[in-house]
Image (cartoon, rainbow, N blue to C red; front, side):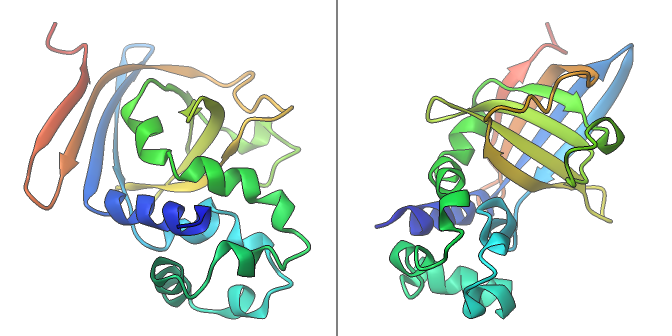
Length: 191
């Protein structure tokens, strides 16, 4: 199994999970409900950058996702792009997204106006590690008051968290929607 298929399988597992995250900042509580869909893979893996592969550039995201899961679209196919080098580290880290979310992270209120060098539109920035690689995960809100993973990539030279308001993690619960299991991963609220 290659990295892109492993990344798709990571998203497939996360589709059954929801994270309830409670954050605190200056006496105010913020609640984030993080959910996943198959559409998340396209942008998180950076497939949108592969504009020189017609099937990826113009194909339906759900069809591309299914083709990656089935092995029809492979890493070798994606490597035909002249821009694959831009997303390779992202795909390799994405395989460990669930481990990153289950581990320790730092949370920041993201303000795109303070990051003029970036075109990322997001509400929150999560800084953590995926397979010992420092990564950034950007969260955006959906119309149903849940959040989704808007962008994801390894931390390189730029510190996206610099100058952003930092939140304190107060509680994190992982819910398996298939069987209803709730796992409290962190809880400072009931201490």
